[in-house]
Length: 115
Length: 112
Figure 1 (cartoon, rainbow over the protein chains, first blue to last red):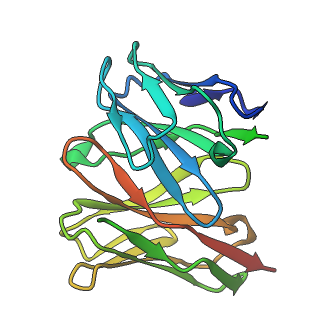
Figure 2 (cartoon, each protein chain N blue to C red):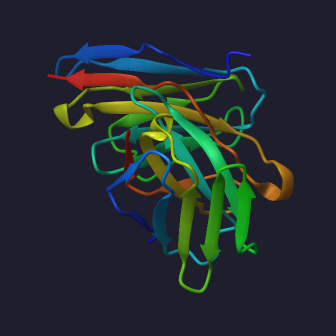
Figure 3 (cartoon, rainbow over the protein chains, first blue to last red):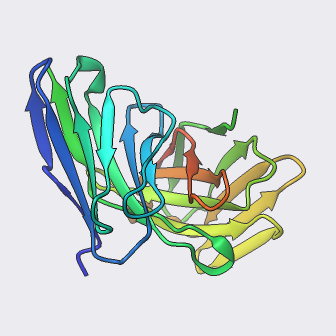
């Protein structure tokens, strides 16, 4: 099992460029999440999905779009990158475990710099 | 809205116990979690506790939950240099979504 994988690992964009971050999981998890991590701010939820074909907004969704066309993949898009989107992006997946405990499994992260 | 607060930094000597504290606001949280992040890596689940429990022990880790004060702590016994990392507290919010709210993270420095 590879667990949760993210591509790319690093990326530098110019302001206004677009890109897509790919998250893939091989654990057959229903739930997937995109977070951003900024210094001193912990992780903030951007968008999430509770199943194939569904997506919902998290805490900081502006400037991002997502799609979950296949259960194992969750894509995060930046249509017009801004310097404020410089961050480390983490994808996670989870399942509803015993007693509805949702244990989230994280990918290794994508470090994005927007100049 | 929901919020999770942690102190930002803790330094201990190797072999001592470490106690990392966390406060949260959502009294309806079903589960509370502790995650560990090593440099350059994603978060790894260490342990979690159900909200109707006061304590959970897992090898060197002890989680204490004071639901009245909305206070959660993680004690690491016999702290080793390999325990140096950032530790995140998280609370579950919303039903049937698995959404979590994370604290800012506590950087644990273990000195030899």
